Length: 397
Ligand SMILES: *Cc1c(COP(=O)(O)O)cnc(C)c1O
Image 1 (cartoon, rainbow, N blue to C red):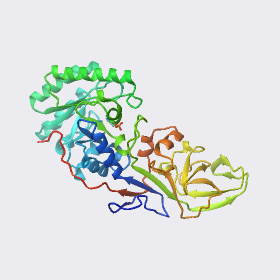
Image 2: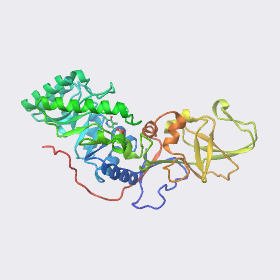
Image 3: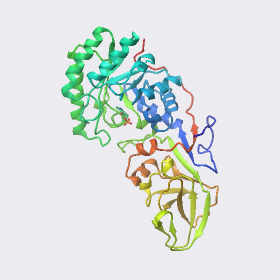
Image 4: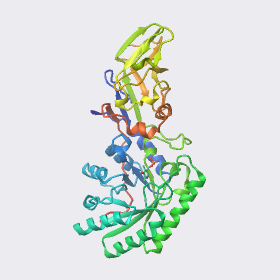
């Protein structure tokens, strides 16, 4: 993977590479999205798990922090430590570590950890004891996904144990968190039930003697369309990179673009089978253009037969199946030459198909496509305009 940084304010963001497929990462879009979302959240946690949804965790983190995010969130302590080693020192929470994990790194690097069970709490206490320090935790309640978080029937016990550890001086409960299962579709009933469950969970924590400063439930969808789920902090990932999980608020800017050069062109007659298994057969004389990227670069095979790309301002269909390293475009009678650049995934600024359209063709989520854009793509990073804004979340000792 090679990365080029465009000079700030570079004209023609999709700076052209006529020989290699390019993933352009738009940190200017991340900056815009962060500002917009921060305007509707009391505090914003930028979720940069999975390498910042595939766009670079450190870049996305720094951009978000410079544009209104107060804190960072990741799934695992490994991801958290990578951010710390890159010099990112904002408040940081990790929420999906195994109960048996050694949480020393959390203590040493000042990372808050989510605690969904007494076993997790014990791991936190053990690390704190070993190092003679206090570990900051957020108790994590399952609010109706039956996935991560503490099952409600075990919650009172967890709160009691956490309070005991707090009194013993090993743990500080800085937050109570939940996560919504049905936020994307803005399912009113399910989200209301989850919110009630969350509020009860916070009440339990209070009854146990805990005073968590940060209550956080909602993610991107909540910031966009569920005011009741916003509480003290919103954990936003998809929205930073321009994905609106609800599909209802066309205010975010896409942060990824994929372009590819044509590497070969051929004119064929009618009745020519294209690619593996000849799943596409030309019906008339036409021109075929070869692009050097495929499913190993993140283009889903399941989009074969439906996907289109933008060639000289026109939508043209892929011909045949997406292969590991290449796809063929039926460009019709367009005059296309090797070295011409095709937009495979666009940002919505022109007629090129967007990530969301690709996801529809592939029967998946834009999240999956974005996190799967391959390491083989050359990366070009468009920086955000320079800003600075100090973080406002709880300070670590
Ligand atoms: C991924 C994740 C988020 C971010 O959700 P988006 O919909 O991407 O904003 C928030 N909280 C938790 C627990 C997550 O796993």
